[in-house]
Amino acid sequence: MTKDAQKTFTLTNNESGESWELPVVEGTYGPHCVDIRKLLSETGYITLDPSFTSTGSCKSKITYIDGDKGILLHRGYNIKELAEKSSYLEVCYLLLNGELPKKAELEEFTGHITMHTMIHEQVKAVYQGFRRDAHPMAIMCGVVGTMAAFYHDSLDIWDPEQRRISAHRLIAKVPTLAAMAMKYSKGQPYVHPRNDLNFAENFLHMCFSVPAEEYKLRPSLVKAMDRILILHADHEQNASTSTVRLAGSSQANPMACIASGITSLWGPAHGGANQSVLEMLDEIGSVDNIKEYIAKAKDKSDPFRLMGFGHRVYKNYDPRAEIMRESCHEVLDELGMKDDPQLKLAMELEKIALEDPYFVDRKLYPNVDFYSGIILKAMGFPVEMFTVLFAVSRTAGWISQWKEMMEEPSLRIGRPRQIYVGEAERPYVEMKKRK
Ligand code: CMC
Image 1 (tube, rainbow, N blue to C red):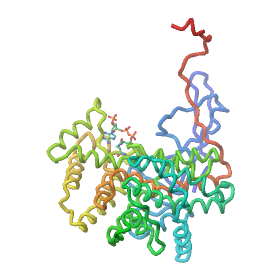
Image 2: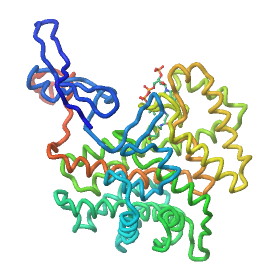
Image 3: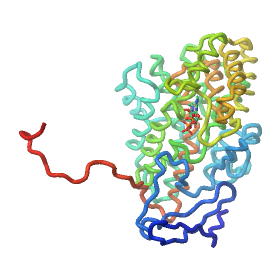
Image 4: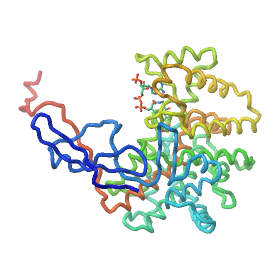
């Protein structure tokens, strides 16, 4: 609950001696905030914060991260409890609606999601336009945006019921689109969703079944899949979520907004890191080479970074990474891959990095992506699909954040300012006089 009360912050211009009282805003937890919305109109000044390290872009009730303590809460519930006790669809409901669902509410919600998993047949033609070797994230950027062309009846962003239907359609259909992207790149026929399966089971079925053989669902892998989905479902105002909110602030339709989130997630500094972790482990190759790569990561003249390490907000062990590490061991045990060389390499790398003063001083701990790639690979997903899986899960967070923003009475288009540092106005130079 915000206590937007009477505390103020005084800003003084040392040159002119003028000063201004700026309101202080406080949330339930987290840093105090100076409300600078009237700064420009009242002082003639703006602020500069290019990577938003000290800027709050919104008030939100959805997710809270205490980066120093390594705590992540969704609607007040700790991620560790959610990962242990809830299902992904329960977490989706929680993110969207603010409360954990009662039994009947969960049944109704699950029913809605299940009934929306199929994709319009014509969408298949969109896939044909992509090269077979296209990165599935490139396909996802396109096909998710394309959904706006197929579901006109839920695009009125001012109608709460249409917003609800769009949210359900996205949570239900993005997994189907993702599985189709995987099938397309493998040259296998698309596998239709099955209503008798739960969310995680259905996703694995759509990714791995083939007409010649139904995929055998293993409960421990289904549980791990569901957990991976829970752990990636939301993470407050990260790059992709902020992208979704900014796109949505222009009153763009929700399908377009989620497509914009997917583009932002793709980068290796964000969701693309899970793919990069595996590529890095491949490159390192063996425990003997770890020292060399740690040295590269510390060398400022070398662009190499230890992928899966570090986080803008967490200055402690990412709680999601802890759960993921546990799941990773469970899955590899179940698959008889306990001695997997990549897992051994990852564990040794983690151990060495956690003891190295460079990483200790900068509080660089493993993040959620460090172990997720190893699990996903063991499950049979190609590395290119890792970030797509992140997008499948994060769709719930993006659409919940979008919905929250759309419900704000004070919605205005997001429009950062800039410090112009280019040329001052100068006379036009005719072509023949240009040197
Ligand atoms: N390896 C080596 N050095 C690092 C790393 C790393 N992975 N991460 C940060 N540093 C250093 C960085 O060079 C800087 O050192 P110095 O103070 O000497 O200049 C210091 O630590 C602070 O780093 P920063 O770049 O200012 O931190 P940031 O908040 O801008 O970046 C990050 C956060 C996640 C982009 C970055 O830590 C990184 O590139 N990590 C690797 C990619 C990765 O694993 N990304 C997944 C993030 S979690 C999932 C998600 O949110 O999508």
